[in-house]
Length: 400
Ligand code: ATP
Ligand code: MG
Ligand code: MG
Image (cartoon, rainbow, N blue to C red; front, side):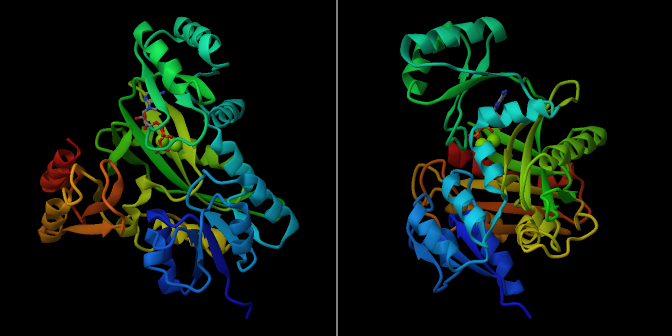
């Protein structure tokens, strides 16, 4: 038998923590590069873990020196060092550094998808800073009309790096706030809802797609740009649009490089057209509920299976009729979320179950510190929504 593979992971937040939780029963070893006591390290004590920043090239190389595969829990990493490792050592980088580099720049990402015939909102690069930027913003306003979205090309998450431009009055403010970033403009999409589809990708030795395995589409709800809830199945989207979303997501992931799990965020327009918003080249907040909804292949197990090139199932079929995921965001006080957690732990329903996941993170306002998954064995999504209402209300109250 070949020696046990060791996966090196850049970043040890909640995604890494849940990856470690999936790896433990499979006896897959994970070595984490992140700060001491990062969420993933709390559940994965390991002599191979490294303390430091996952942005530090020397530390990444040190991690690679005792791993067979490197993977990431965030796309905001140094892809030059990943490229060097992939091309000069036997360590596989999953997904490919090429995918991560493309995705890091949201404007390049959109331009690439458009060039491959994937439906996306129209985008325009913003040039310069100061007066040149202001002129560029005015030109976009004339072209798109209000509102439109100004986005930083790099390093954004949870909407940090996005600004909705609603009128002339916002332009000066946008220059002051975003002048230091490289930016692009995106047409505003008056969507009826947002969907996300996870896709598992494997490839052959030439880098051609071997398998594309989509999960069922889920509905994501964002409030203040942060995902607050996820619904399986989507509450009102017609099944035909959900199937189309699975097809579009598979087409997107087919155009990327490397093995692993990917999430494709999409808008559903008022006439049920699908437009791709963005890709995450890793496990994603929209996929947490599959831990319970598809217990034989959570997105974390899928990530392990794909990057270790092991056998994937023929299909991804939920074991429940419905599921809702509610993010626990930090509130005004460090313990604002505790009554919600206590309520979730006390709720039992008729063939409905509530699962609490806390990440071991210090609570800060709007920080993702945990989530709750509710499942219904036979309940419709509307019935499950009724059951979960107290949790949804309490989670919303914390955010006020
Ligand atoms: P993430 O945490 O998912 O990486 P992000 O910071 O990259 O988020 P986006 O995905 O670009 O941000 O946008 C966050 C949310 O803002 C979207 O899910 C959507 O609700 C809204 N949004 C983004 N772009 C548009 C658009 N063009 N039209 C309308 N709403 C948009
Ligand atoms: Mg993003
Ligand atoms: Mg997003």
